[in-house]
Image (tube, rainbow, N blue to C red; front, top):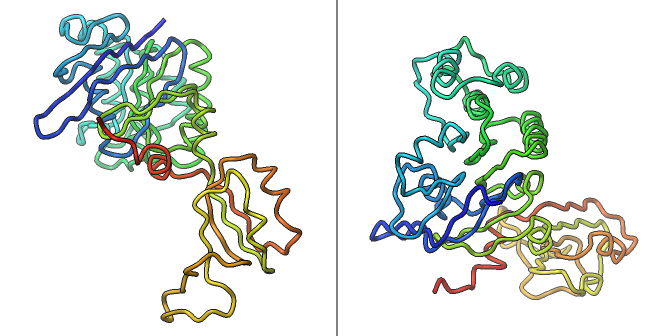
Length: 317
């Protein structure tokens, strides 16, 4: 059953088409990642789903309620938790006062366990909070009334690595208990850890909806090799290697003292290179010679690179 059902949703500001004929669903008990670079239209979609703005055309239902029905949209909000990309708390209030306000408006079934988990400093005023502490307080207020649907816009902004992991473990457990989550992010590693399916938006249009494993197969990884011994280029001449770049060869003079030169044509051998790899990492490692490697780095491809590789050449029409 779809908790969110979007059909032809469009928001046209005249000069800017923020959302263009979006159609997708978010099913009960899944974490759906809504991906795209900043300015792609993610937040506009969220604001329409929450009733903060009206669509130009098309429609959507959230927990069975049509977003065009303002009265019903207001009524269903007690079943929704929402964390914006920049929580707008009253700077003069303390964390405890913010918590008490949210409890009075929406209820408080879970604040004790959430405070133990995320631990924002409740006695301080919000003006004295760090970005991370605001985010932790935001997570408590988002989940404290035990909602059926949670909409998260860049939820790990400002969190340290330990808290990000704690949040990820918590969200997966909530999903396993039946919670439905729409998670907007531009951080691919976060999406990999959390999401079941993903929808990618570019320039206001939905590019694709895929299971997260399918997306990861298509995006590949960034690989950097630094070898103490020359490696022949043929070792990287196989399917899955894309955008191969070589650093300057040993003994070549740099153009300036500050800017190393880059080989103008592919060398027969190299000591440093970088590329995107979409195949099996074990196969890649097996194909490398038994050279004295100084470094072998394998990282997730930045989401911006994913767009350029797979979707950058597509027409918007």
